[in-house]
Image (cartoon, rainbow, N blue to C red; front, side, top):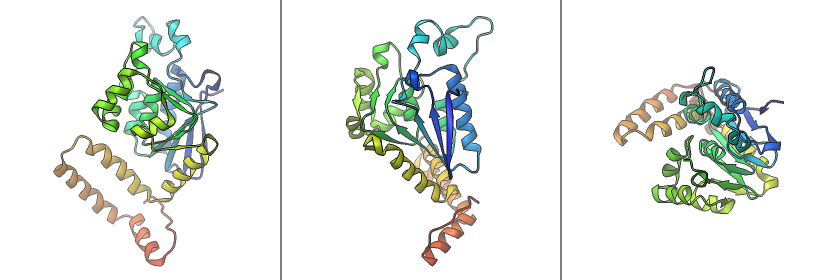
Length: 265
């Protein structure tokens, strides 16, 4: 059985972590499969929105601690420098790929998100959380740091002081606490999670895909640009979009009082 599965619904691709018997804990195989599926979805013109979630009762419980305690799995691969060891490049880890791609990603946090699983959730552009789920930032209690994006995302999402509080105390966060501090966009009853996430995804997919792509690119670039440089970058993007068929369709549908039908060109 594949450790990562996909489901397509219209322009929405759901990528599912699929080790429910181990709470979707991370293995090298899962990471490789997940990375390839994320890249494939970003490259597929029939995909406009990606949903990332977990099978069963967890989103992702982080590294497989049973393997880690035996010196196997991810920790074994990273620490073993002997002959034949596989070396993982930061350019090919899933959280880097998530940050690099242009398709919007919604994290459907269906259950526990811990360790690497929390970093994966932070790498999503939006997060909708089940009221039965829990965030577990217990890095400091395990003697490590948020190793795959958390140290970059948390101060930007929450501010310096709140990022320090969450990561250094290491206390579990309920869905409501996660919402109140800004870690997630919305909390919904567990039974409604899939429906709400798909509603969001389908709304985004129905909008102009070129504009959505440019928004994400500009948000990303804006993190490292001064205002004047960024404004120039935005203007160039707007001028390009004015020449697109999507813009013409958007104007025509508005004037004709009908739903637009965007083609992504």
